[in-house]
Length: 182
Ligand SMILES: [Zn+2]
Ligand SMILES: [Zn+2]
Image 1 (cartoon, rainbow, N blue to C red):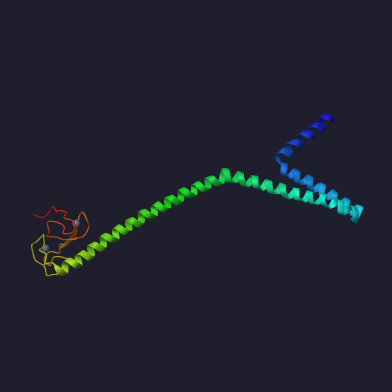
Image 2 (cartoon, rainbow, N blue to C red):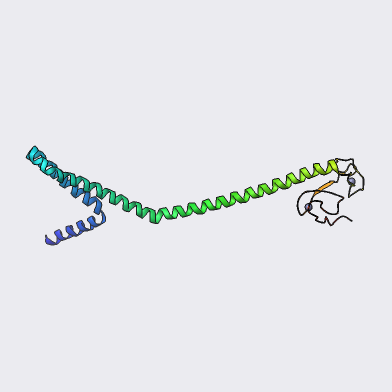
């Protein structure tokens, strides 16, 4: 019988340690119920005297609930939320970097294209006719391709990307040598 009671006591202690907040709330609820019963039983004069006790019980229940919630929040914050936040930061940084790279790449491509198209228009309007590097025919001003063989008369500069006359030996924008003109 004694051993049986001891075992019950031990498991009760284990339970209270594991579910301390629940046990405490249960105890306080019991106390509050007892106080309420006494207030109802003893009449309004005694009820007034017992009222603070009831309030203390209710406040303690609220405090226990709040503490349990705070502990859970801290535990979650420390072990889970920090991991989530770290993952989010890494993801955000990666996305930002990718976005930046894509944006600069897009700007570069757009600038080169604009320079090439604009340069070609400028050059074709002002420059003398281009002599075709392949067949030697001189096309009319403004021609983009050779009228005799279809070769491109303007090519992008290998260094700066602007439109170069195909018969030019050097880029007029950056001075890069085309190298293949003889
Ligand atoms: Zn040609
Ligand atoms: Zn150039």
